[in-house]
Image 1 (cartoon, rainbow, N blue to C red):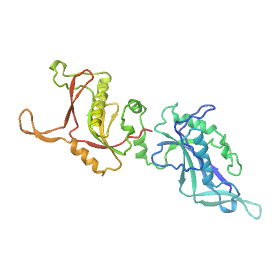
Image 2: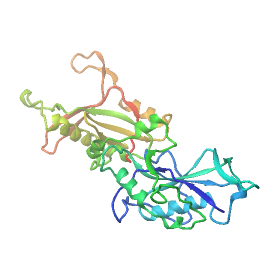
Image 3: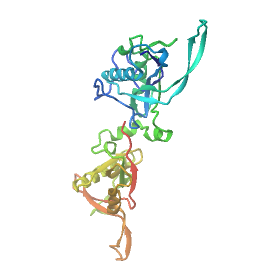
Length: 335
């Protein structure tokens, strides 16, 4: 069955001579379906679009789905994460010859288009980004599975079978989802070596229970001259240390605690929830929300935040005050 390939490509890969810009741990199983989901991307490479020709124009050979699967498998053997995606039907004009040997344009409704997309990239801003380098590699790549002329028909002006590749976004995501999933490389760097990073949380939601801005830390039992300490980077080093200590302390108490660092603060979250309606969310809120308690100084009822006394490696004690109002957030994407 003859298949016409319309070369449009979502690209987010590497431009290097010879070896492909691979990613570690890319599975490649012959015959297995690798279909696109919202978890992939947000930036990708559109590698090819396979469209079935009308019945009267088909010859023997691979159909569109088989050709797409073969291309996905071949790219994966090169270490490139590739997927298939079914696109909505469209009208396509095709040149045909009538009984008088005259060329006519006819429109056909193409019921299915199978797209091949590759890559999972959070950003393409840098000229040397993995996405852009891989794109250039794909444009020069000549896949062996397309060498059969019954499957591939060259497009005029295109350097090769995949020469029309271009960078785009995961077609399953709306603009808001794309914006939310684009990761700042600096944020990735801040969290790349963090134990129990929120980026590794398997759930979709977690609850922020403590926030640290790092400018100071209150010691327990120290004199007034030593009640404040500051570290580098405007105190952010201290914020990271505080958050890490609190996360470890909560995990020692059996809680699924995580830590996350950005440009302004570090936070500690609790929970691995797939739904915002998970009963465990309310349990976390109840545990950490500020409560009305007798004020230690006056004995009068006062809304007091929960707290925890922790010790540094040097033996100094400091008081962690949890956020009075915990907040549920979506777990950020790592890729």
